[in-house]
Image 1 (cartoon, one colour):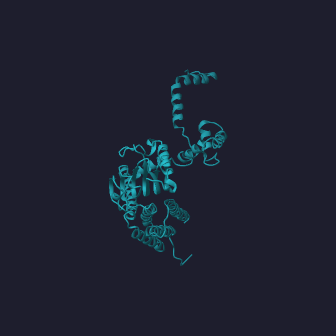
Image 2 (cartoon, helix red, strand yellow):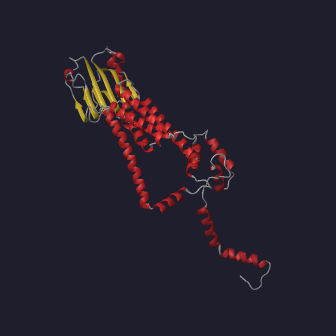
Image 3 (cartoon, helix red, strand yellow):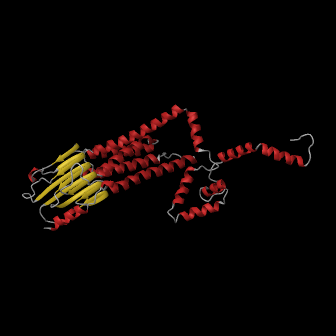
Length: 65
Length: 343
């Protein structure tokens, strides 16, 4: 598509999940939420998974270019 | 050999003679052939990754036999399935370049010192990321959780915004390292504000125990209440707060242990009841009002919490520890039941 801004999906996804994890840390540290370690582990694994997923999608995109 | 008068039989005879004469050479050739024969996954005869096909070719056996063996092994512990996966990973396919040779070629092209330099840079980068994660965890543990979280959110926003200007992928790894370290420390409620080291407390009366209890950031804490005058202090309230390490609380066998304990990650052993894992909560005594009684409120973020109701356990070598040194804690459970049931 011409005229469209090219978005680096990997950076966008990594930034979003980093901000989300930061928000969780903020809520937990301020006492607004008490997140158990197990659930934080799930959240961190999901964050890493999302980054890897977008990394894989980006790699596939580059190969087809 | 006779080359002057060749006959029809002569070539065969010559061959036999030549064969006898060069037996050693043939043996060497065969040995070389065995040495150079390599196990490769078959790209032509394959169902999944060509492992059975490669094995069949290597051993000169019908690959179907290996396929049936791999399939049956799933029902007998799955060792064959694991072997299949390992073979699929480590055995190259016959159409692929040898990975070891490929790596060797790259090293030769790049030069050994340059390659070692790349490896060293990689290790340093990994260590730097670990340091970042550790630094973030430490910041949260010393009470800077909110500022650390704000910094992480800001980095995330910058990273996301940069996606519209070509991206800033170099920032991803540091951002993830920071988020991981801070996230784990926050969820584990790590608290290093109590200092670092080894503390041992041996109060002789309930009044000698601080109202806010004993607190340690990182290290080992021992609270021995066995010399305390339990006749005058029938109910003792004790708060123990440890960030990371080991907290040991000793009480006499005749004292009922009640209250709540929490261990974020590690092991908890309270009056003989042991549990391991994450977010361990124990409430010993089942709300007993028996006296003498220890009403404990203990928290260990990462490590081991032990409340040992034993008159003989040594502070130096208590004998109640992790792994093979664990003793049978049945006597502690029996003492707790006896002490708490008396009321």
